[in-house]
Image (cartoon, rainbow over all chains, first blue to last red; front, side):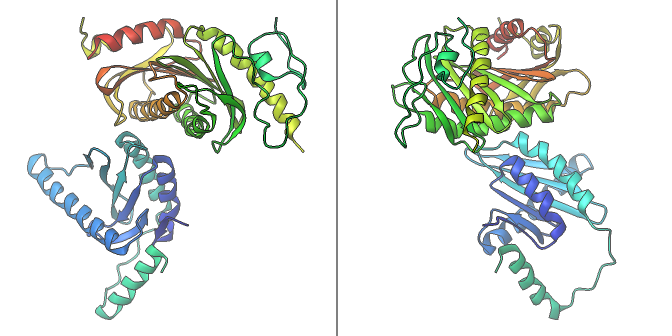
Length: 156
Length: 152
Length: 116
């Protein structure tokens, strides 16, 4: 069963390479507003949407705090629990800024995730298509696009 | 006496550097994992030959309580060998050749007879590391010989 | 005797053929302290050495040989050596292929006992 699924096909290879190298349990690639581009390891839509929303919110709030403290946002955040760790990093691609949320366990480490995150950013930048002019999102298209995205992310 | 590897010499004989023993009659089907048995001298606990998926190809290993742990250790060796390969590659050290581990009660030496296999030699701590390396070199030669014989 | 991180690493890096020495948080694979020659990637050494040590520990324990006290990866063009210290710290050194591993082992063991 394929565990990496993507709305944007160009993200698949970099994501799969990252997951193979880090042995991450869960990985999400999303926009700063929490829109998911690719995911690995999630089996339920409700989980991926909740994780994306929470991850985006954490990055947003910590960025504001970083601005208050030093003027520039934190490049990455790491939370280490007893059994799992959560890593949140951001990358600026030519066309857009993306966030990456990674959940790892004792099979991996935050050091490995950080190391291969650098590679993921390089791979995504190389694979990313050139920027397009932004199209207007119409209400009528929203539900259809949402359903297409969910189908791409969960194979349904 | 150093024994040159031949098709008729069990690997332990070469690993231990003792005189070659005659080839045993072919083992019955399903019992082809004992060609290294009977050579427990020199603090030897076992030798394993494992493929890159962590499956045991040949050998036996006795654990702390006298239990056979070959299959279990083989499963861990695949991950360890993969990590050794990746570490050496990403740090610019070239291809890995061996990994020596000094444990509390025994020493392990991982070596790479071929790019597709890993060999593990386990000995008591008393054996000097240099000798362990020499034994592993010999075991690798024998393993390559044995693997060559298995080709259809 | 307790050593400062700088003094501890200097004892290792003064051995001929050593390209760098580090203290690494074993569980996290992160750098605690480092003294590296140019071109040696500290974060990569820390993450990979810690991961290798973790996997070898599993194999060593499963083989009934106890907890590792010394690891030596020999490669075509270099050497990586790691010695576990108390509190989950790893003392790690990267060296040339022909570095004196015996001397390195002795010094790293002394550092592991003295550094934390």
